[in-house]
Length: 182
Image 1 (cartoon, rainbow, N blue to C red):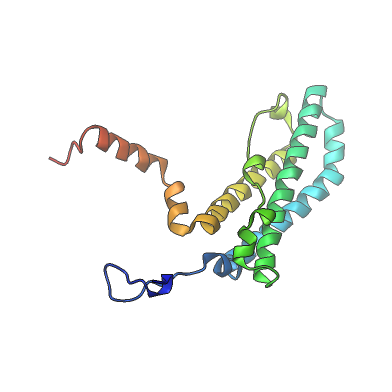
Image 2: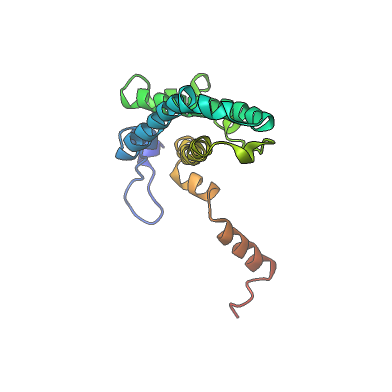
């Protein structure tokens, strides 16, 4: 039986599969995150090519090394995020289908650019660079969530990104056999 002819157990209506990938690319959410991502890339480039150069010259040796390391990590992260956004825009513009965008040759490995580690001297980075780094991680987390939804579907992505407090409460209830419900 084909996917579209299956019926929902709770109703006589046939199940309808929604292509989240193509719907997402057409959404206002995508337009907003695309603009935000591209604006962040442009703002970062302007900072690093302008005021960031002056800022980095005023840093002590260890902080200057941290500046170089963190600015490279930032630009790498943003280029990966921009690549992902551009891939989704290609789906929106009809240059690729959502299924084609999920194929391995187009996959962008976002997991590698998300690792956040402390670099010695990073505590004295310029405020502007620290702000750009923080904003890039916020964008990264949102895009990772969206990418999971595109690959696995919205329900599975929500389960994967479930509330850690609820997870702990569930574990406690399971460990104590639902104590408190007597």
